Amino acid sequence: MSSYHQNMQQSDKGQLALSGKEPLPCPDCGKVSLIRVKNDCTLLDGTVVPNLERLQCSSCKANFFDVPAMDAISAHRRKISRKDTDMQSRKKQDTKIA
Ligand SMILES: [Zn+2]
Image (cartoon, rainbow, N blue to C red; front, side):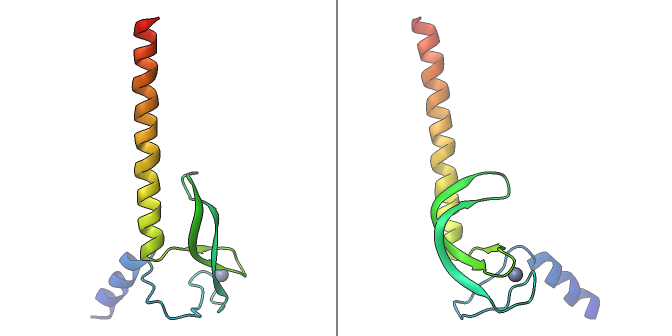
C-alpha cells in the first residue's frame, strides 16, 4: 500500500495544487518563501508570458502556477499559436500575389 501512495505522489509532481493558503513551503528547496509576483515569466519551453501572476520562491526562484496562472498560460499559448498561423497564411498569400 505504501508503494501505491508513493506512485500517487510522483504523478502529482509538477502539477502542484495550490489551495490558496499562504505561505507555503517551496517544494524545491523546502523554504517557506513563496511570494506572489506579477511580471514576465519565461516558461521551460522558452515561451514568455507577459505579466503573469504566479507564486515564486524568493529563495531558489522556482515558479509555481495556481489555477488562474495555468489558465493565463494556456490562453497565452492559444494566442501565440493563432498569431503564428495568421502570419504563415498571410505570408503564403503575399507570395501568391507577388
Ligand atoms: Zn525554493
